[in-house]
Image (cartoon, rainbow, N blue to C red; front, side, top):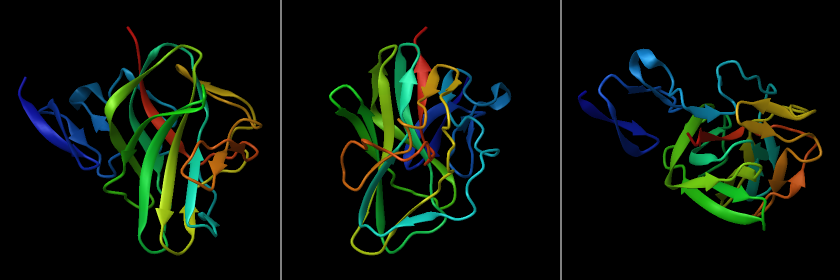
Length: 205
């Protein structure tokens, strides 16, 4: 089958000719096969996810937010994804950072070069990360700016209990809604709030 290149968040990817990227950069569609069937995302249907009516705002120049997942099968994280806030103050840089709770350790990162406010955006990792079954991963977004506040979409009490979707289990209220005010592991947990940070996960065959 003929190949084509699709631009996904600033990265050109070789795909089948029938493939297309959604306008918001959410994921790749593969012709009649639909969304990549093997790749799992926790927020797998972003069109139906609900958010609180307005962005929340933190009076800080730097902020890291994340979601804590237990990986239920060995597999590979290939991308990071985030639902961007509706607004931003001034010029803001956004970086996806994948942490393993073991350590904790920063294992991968990638810069969102083409953020789209109010939309889901994915970024390819330069090198996939292979996770072990039972490993706790915390995909996170670090945002920084010289001035102004940091904005983010959220849903209060989203993780009032553990939620399992496929091979990903989001941890419960005392272990989720992760944040910190630095470019570091988000160890704080905010009552199970969702900041809609996600990852693309491909289980081993």
